[in-house]
Image (cartoon, rainbow, N blue to C red):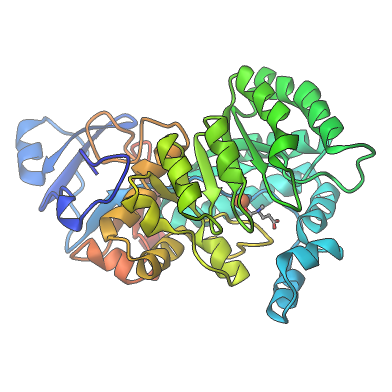
Length: 401
Ligand code: NIG
Ligand code: FE
């Protein structure tokens, strides 16, 4: 990924490939990268590992949008949707996000931690080394804190880096005795300072939708969060437009979903340097169209791709499969797909230390047993990494499992 741009189209022949390559790791980082023989001759290395046979190595994948901290299941919603009910109808009749809130509140903190650890380890085996995780199924100061502490604890128990995001502004909780403005004021005054004090998260997310918050309702909350120094991201234009405007107005780092975005919204995002995050797992889970990824790139935008792994709209949680499928439907080059799940996803998380195999970057990478990197996306997620390295250490070896 060395030298590739943050924005716009990338052709496959722009990818800098190293054949007969090697990576010299020092501590957590990449010290040098180049031909294996040249590296071995030049550096007095210890612990040389030579992989017999054909292998392809790519940067550790970065999943910049998930909701893997939750209790219960929404298999019932999935069945109802496939019987003809819409996501919003189901939400109005007792299913949807509120159902997961109810089930998550009933789940003990240790059980929540266990769930996050289990799901994060599954992502790791699929080559993901950095995973964003949102709260948003607690929806009270106390229950959101329970989730964020659980994510913090899980982060200490897994090799993957978990990047926590506070999504207390997911929907107005059904049991809240007051207006949206009052709820948002309460979390901005009682929860946000606590996130700073306890190092729980420096990212704030929200859901702008007819069934969630309107641009007008959310403005004072995002203003406050910005003043406090939080990075902002937005669930935008999933079913109806409006969220991308909010993302642009508040200089959000990313606008995620965008299935309903038209040329106008794309223009807004591109002009304001907001990174677009396509969530093909939500399109597959809901059976709807994909975000206009090709148009976003052609308009000069930055496009990341994430799994949105959550119990409602995106239960599959397989980033590589979903990114490959998005590539096939939206006509993205392999280079654009790989960029979307590596350094462009790192930028969406404001992480400048990962996502490329380059000197000085974190030594996060995965190795696939194949002669050509094109085979990875071609297999649409069915070719799994045989090894995953995180911070310079081999943390998953398929042959040992
Ligand atoms: O990204 N759109 C809103 N939030 C999640 C879905 C959460 C849920 O249905 O539980 C999403 O799709
Ligand atoms: Fe989401």
